[in-house]
Length: 259
Image: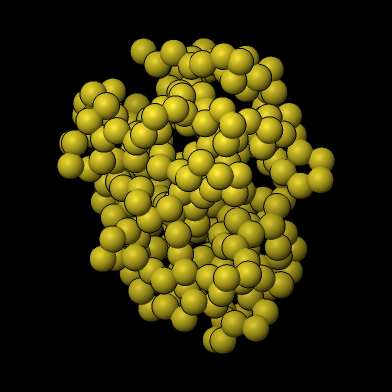
């Protein structure tokens, strides 16, 4: 059974409803401007989530071509030099994308491709979990899917649970940092699917729809749930401190050392 979710946050989430994501981010060709040795014939139009996922899962498409499409969709920018730095280390990225495409990775192995000693400079969890989502094959029936753990989905999960499922700073612009582990990521993905159950939904792709509801839409005219999260983080963030033992008590199938 899914855990109880906390009001008024849960009611606000339910009432916000589902609005599918349209094209977001930059065009891949525009995003790649100024980077050296980029693949030829990058798309010159913005891509949908579905288009990017199809490119990333297609083993006939160059991994770095698909990587650019994913990062452009996700809106990775160069304000702190992250885009340039990650691209400089693209030789580290390619084999990780190959491993994701091949499948057969659980959440821990997928997350650990990019964390700790395997980290890629300039590529934090908000972006490398997008790669895990886009490049991983569809999970077998009944298995927990891979989802994007960015600042908005992570804040949403923490607000709804009133627990530190994902480690985040208690500041307005908080984003999942390097302190998160494979256990945090797997617990986060489990929560996406717990929400599917709590909403009484079923069917292929429903977890994706819930993740889109959690991420919502920002900008000058945000969708209702994004506006709610902005208004309630950090003032209604979970109380207390991050507690690995407490998380293991909830997600008993995840080894405590993963937290």
